[in-house]
Amino acid sequence: GHIGDGNLHLNILKPENMSKDDFFAECQIVNKYVFETVQKYGGSVSAEHGVGMTKKPYLHYSRSEAEMSYLRDIKKVFDPNNIMNRGKIFDIK
Image 1: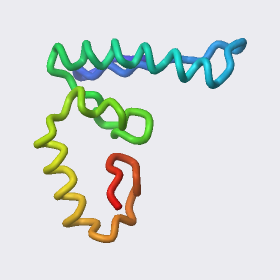
Image 2 (image 1 turned 60 degrees about the vertical axis):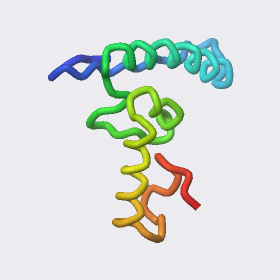
Image 3 (image 1 turned 180 degrees about the vertical axis):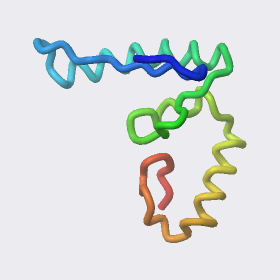
Image 4 (image 1 turned 135 degrees about the vertical axis):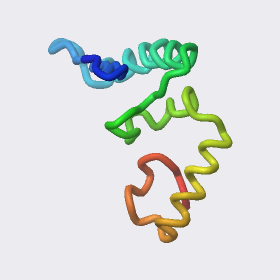
C-alpha cells in the first residue's frame, strides 16, 4: 500500500501457492479487521479510487444509513434508469 495526504491504501497480494477461493476467503477475514479499525478512527472505506464491487459490502463501516439513503436519492436523480455503474454501489432494481 501507500500513504499520502492522509489516505492509506492497502493492497493484499495473493501468494502464488494459494487458490483464488482461499485467498478471497482470507481477505474477507482481514477486511473485517481493517474496516473495523477504519470505523474506530472515523476513516473512510474508500477515497479517490471509489467503492466498486470489492468495497461495496464494507461501506456501512464508514457511511451511515442516512448517508446511504442520500447517495441512493442522488443516484436516482442523475441516473433514473439505473444505467450507469449498475450494481457497483447499490442494488437498485
